[in-house]
Amino acid sequence: MTTQDVLDERYGRRRSPRARWIRGGFIGLAVVVVGAFAWMTVANAFDDIAAETTGFRIEERAVTLDFQLTVPIGRDIACALEAQDEDHGVVGWKIIEIEASDQHTRAFRESIPTVAEATTGLVNTCWVT
Image 1 (cartoon, rainbow, N blue to C red):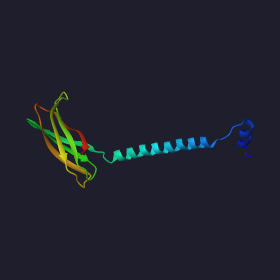
Image 2 (cartoon, rainbow, N blue to C red):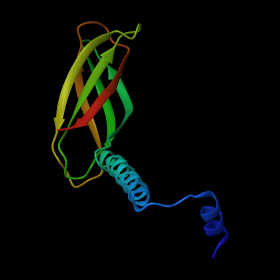
Image 3 (spheres, helix red, strand yellow):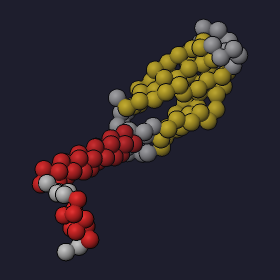
Image 4 (tube, rainbow, N blue to C red):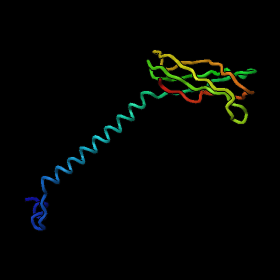
């Protein structure tokens, strides 16, 4: 008889099968929750898009934006480009759609029409379509 068995007998503690089932159920539920969280984290990483502005050129009524995108291979994407004035107000906006490719990183050049004088151009956001 182990020490634990002696103590259980002395103080009247018993381990019921029901308690083991409940404990096993909680452990199983915890494993399922952790697995689901891990899968959601990995699945979201598959659609990550990185956009980097590599340059821009200010014109009279437009901004020509050079940028580089790192995208999931074989996925169509869309990006919102914007031109801003010196107070960071948006003076030009353009949505572009980019066809799927087998290249992971690609460079682009787009012209954004403006309604006032711009001082910068940038990629606001991109998403998988």
